[in-house]
Length: 459
Image (cartoon, rainbow, N blue to C red; front, side):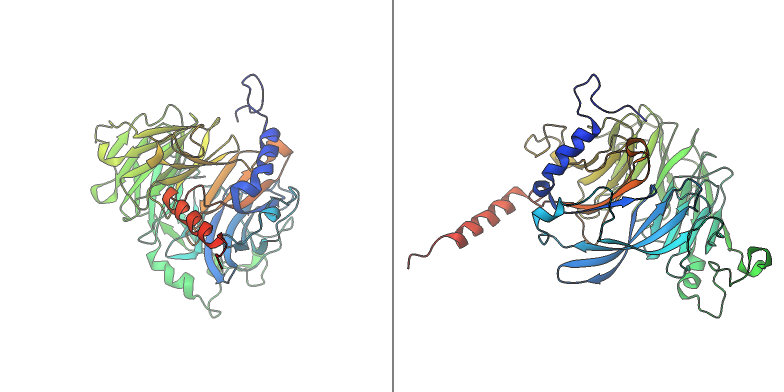
């Protein structure tokens, strides 16, 4: 991890930046919940919406606990209360204790995970089904509603996955994606391979498993030594294995409208586009997409021509696949530069085709609008072209974040605080004030209507 702080460059230290940020919370945010984590979570994902009320919604949230071995690693299912826009009072949202847990986040269920949880992804067709990556070659599939709640104590037996996807020859730790259009799973690993599965045949049994059939997530009251073959997790072999990278595959993503088209990035600095219908070789391979290892990739869900990549070279790059050729030639549409350390996660907004986020080891989560790259009028334009907002509420590397599709400007983000505070992590659920992203003419119109209402009567 790169050195941060005020040494030599005139940059404020992490604590100075954080203190300044906290004073601005009532001004910059419509709502914010800060939740201290005893153990860091390397991934965070929104689950299904549970309840809609007048002032807030209730929704599932998937997290993990990466422990030191004194207790088991876990996959955590939490219930979150999400305050609706323009409801929270400004003076309240800044009144939080960094060492406390948020009243808006309640643990609902714990699954004892075989190994640490490096990545969580939910199935779009049924977000109660999630996939996880750990330090092994397998992808684990969980029906989180059917899995029993477990007490994570030292020596407790591991929860049993509902499915195990096999096909990697070496550990597959991070690269993981679920398809929007079909129940397909995609993974990448240290074997330099991209692996594709379909769980179509198993979706119905995962969703409708009854008490008459022993759940693969339960040990039925038996000790591990007395369990029989009936309770072993079923395994699915790969539908396709795709070779083209020369080093570890760090991230993968499906084309939003196709289970047959996908992309991958890796430590070989390559961005590769694949099409399962044409074979297992790359369709397009951009040999030098960045000047260092690539950590993350995302495919625009609204305009499928655009693909984002993030790298250890501290930049985010935007590629237009129409400009990429089979010879591996293709320059980025734009290079976004504002992070001071390796970019760990990039993700498009589910609601606006030009909006995306990027998080990095510098503890910052940036929100960008690539339509504003040529403008200098945005609130954060003095930092970098296209920069809309800087979320500086974390004090260490922001390892993951996720836009909320049910409330598109609400984001959950997690940081691993081991290097800054000596352990644990921070989860934040936040929504910037809408004056930052609303069209200027819309804001002016609302302001004018407010002035008219406020004018005193002549009578």
